[in-house]
Amino acid sequence: MSDVETPAAKPKSSWQNLLVDYGPLVIFIGVYKWSAPAESDPAGEIAAVINGTLAFMVAAVIALLVSKWKFGSVSPMLIFSTVLIVGFGALTIFFGDPLFIQVKPTIIYSILGAALLIGVWRGKSFLQILLQQAFEGVDEQGWLKLSRNWGLFFFFLAGVNEVLRYLYNFENGKFETYLWADFWVILPLTFLFTFSQIPMLLKHGFSLDGGEDEDEPEEQAPPPPPQS
Image 1 (cartoon, rainbow, N blue to C red):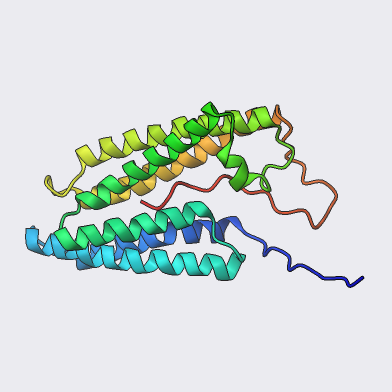
Image 2 (cartoon, rainbow, N blue to C red):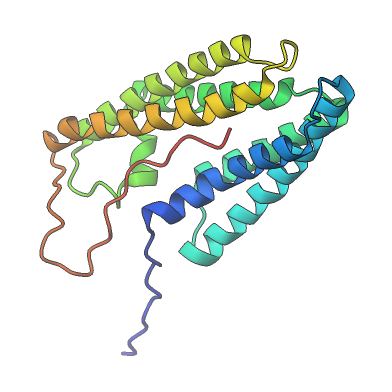
């Protein structure tokens, strides 16, 4: 009998995950700000949005490739968000309308929220498929509760994005404010919500003690929402 060693999964770190998830958004904001005209100029603003969108699309694809190279795998959520970034980015460039950039997060959050809640309704936890290694020991009821809570939270984020889109948009000259608000509002809310779920998970078998096995995988928080 021959011993065949399977390659071990590459370890992940929280800062590397954040870089992959939010690096493209930071690049988009930077390119947009660098390209934006000093004075109010609709044509110049649209050109800045297109430049930022192009950089966003390229950075998103690079982030996906880096995830595959660095971690050995690409999460379904990252693939999903990258496809939408490229798709809506292409629409933004084709029509020259920043609306597609602002509507994309609402569509992503709504689809994810609906998928999770439909899964719970059918007695299945789609989050368990993605995060089982990160939350070992959680029982079936805990996974269903976590999926339900994240489903509702994704719909909440969709509502928050619509409020931000209404208050800060290209028409009222506050599109850049929307970009920063989306970054500084959605991200902190996501981290706060993630940590708020730990007490519930502890009641359903999750343990914060990494155990005595040094080879045990590093704990991971649920992935942040797809790039905006």
